[in-house]
Amino acid sequence: MLKQIEGSRAVAEAVALCRPEVICAYPISPQTHIVEALGELVAQGSVGNCQFINVESEFAAMSVAIGASAAGARAYTATASQGLLYMAEALFNASGLGLPIVMTVANRAIGAPINIWNDHGDSMSQRDCGWIQLFAETNQEALDLHIQAFRLAEELSLPVMVCMDGFILTHAYERVDMPTQKQVDAYLPPFEPRQILDPDQPVSIGAMVGPEAFTEVRYLAHAKQMEALELVPQWADEFRRAFGREAGGLVHTYRTEDADTVVVALGSVLGTVKDTIDEMRRRGVRIGALGIACFRPWPLAAVRQALAGAKRVIVLEKSLGVGIGGIVSTNVRTALDRAIPVHSVIAGLGGRPITRASLGAIFASDTLDHTTFLDLDRPLVERVLAREKELRRSGPRAETILREKHGLPAR
Amino acid sequence: MPGADSVDLMFQIRIHGRGGQGVVSAAEMLSIAAFREGRHAQAFPSFGSERTGAPVVAYCRIDDKEIRLREPVMQPDALIIQDPTLLHQVDVFAGLAPGGTILINSSRSFEELGLKELVQRYRTRTLPASEIALRHVGRPLPNAALLGGFAAVSNQVSLDSVTAAIREKFSGKVADGNAAAASAAYRHAQAD
Image (tube, chains in turn brown, cyan):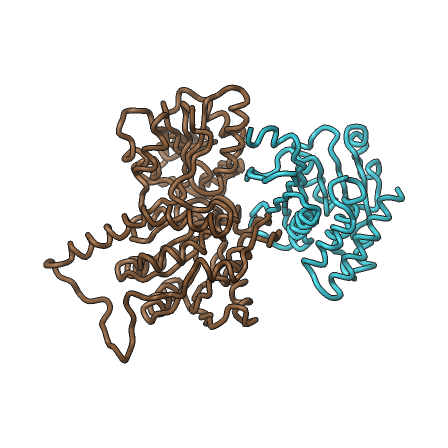
């Protein structure tokens, strides 16, 4: 059924259709509307046999999800930003124990400086925590990925993070096609746990493992994730057959057939990238895009194949690995088996708009550096650096930048 | 060719107001109204830290095909200004397309607001939306009335779709009052 609703509402309704049995969450912007809507749906009795548990922190949210999943319940939570960091230890436990929890990350920047707006710093910081990471381009894809995520998680007995851009998607009203309960039930069978805490057949989950077997347990964790490289496209194909539309998979290509330049990106910015590419194509520029729908496991072969004809690659990314630069570009470089330039363009940090005008200029540039910060206010940075050179006690940097930006006298 | 001329046919609206005036809800309801007419629509707020009284911006795009663009609306085809005191605080007219539409919540004319020079260049209209809302909703919340006015001055959505969107977003007396305000504003704007 076609609906014009907020992205958060769409995700909440899709999660409800997946018949979760335990939802535990702690509110944090921009995830709040998702769990508010789910709380309402559970209270109305429209989520079947589901318990909504208010917890006191994100660490508790993930811990409750771990307990629920180990007891055989289909468990769901959602978070963002500092909330994801606060549950970091439990994230590794969920994946290490092989518990198929599904979580939405409403992507938001990480402080300091505190910033409530969108970028990918939060989920990128947890890219190697053992969870599968899927990135949504639109609200339709966000809701569809949640349905696939439960299927994938339970098939592999691994947790899955569905990443969607905070505010840009979570707070946007757009058209979505909401499937029926019958369709979702046909795609997503009831949860059959591989392991279960059952008083009648007692087991212990979470044994201490010493040097004699720790490597083997980690090896299996890696092998399990790599198995997802087969299953992600398989479940996406099955999804297309069942629901009649494309969602998920490992990567999506856009006009790459004869493209000299391929732009690699994740998430909602791909829409603006595609519009920019169409404008450039009309002027005869041979440019295309590669969207990474599954970031973990890293789809090395699919990326290599998609970039096979490219003469150069521009990786547009909403996060920064301080001390190395682009995180996605570092991954992209591992997928290339020939020497072509890979340029990182760091964009949209802390919610800065990514415009067609700026993208058009950067994509057209033939003098890109290894790493470029889109729309960087260079004079502002120079002023702050000059001040730091001059003064030992130059003061707190974020406050100094804001005063400079707004033309206020320095303290 | 996919996406050809996507920009040219798209209609973009920017709504300016203050926290508490229902700016974000207005953009959302406008998108619902367009959706009800079978069109694609996208509404989103400017994501500021919203506080009562602080300037707030929300956007709505309407098109006949899927909308992929995620940048803020920088070249609007229409502006809805929910609070005329913003005229002296924010560059509300920034980027307005030539011949674009400006709808301001005010009982005064553009000339009286000191905006005479805009009348030649744009389609301009003022509407006493807060007064209409006071009458029908009991509170000076101008958003629904302005959407009724927008239906009258633009060819983008019908009044029926606007009132249906209001009823989708609100219920009971609040929905009735706002739908009545939108209808009254529509008639007012048509009579001008």
